[in-house]
Length: 179
Image (cartoon, rainbow, N blue to C red; front, top):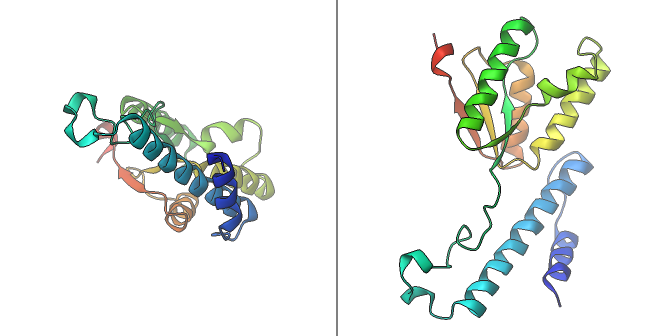
């Protein structure tokens, strides 16, 4: 049986972990991907490095990073205020994105993208944009909460969803915006 067959079997064996069918599917997919990476890692260790423990530190292959699993920056979902003073909140969001990029991350902020095509004043469109952002959050490796301007209702919902999906939440401040 191939590792892909194993991953598909792992997906079939997982139960939905969230209320949304999409969120449950994404959580299951993330679990299957993690299991697949774990199996590939140990296959590499056992086949390609029989005596890992005796290797010099610079040649060790006993960590996922050494096996090439960190080939891209971590995906980070940005949570910051949007409604209210949109000029100030937009400037703060851009500062949060810069901060995340400086940390070597690949940030995504749905409230920077979706208002370009959806009207935040129309409740259905606002909810549609939020749900699309939460879908991206399901594949994020971290949720970064920028809290210098407070935590809005939308941010609180994003934090709650991250906790339920077992995605790490990191609270951050930007020096220039701290009061």
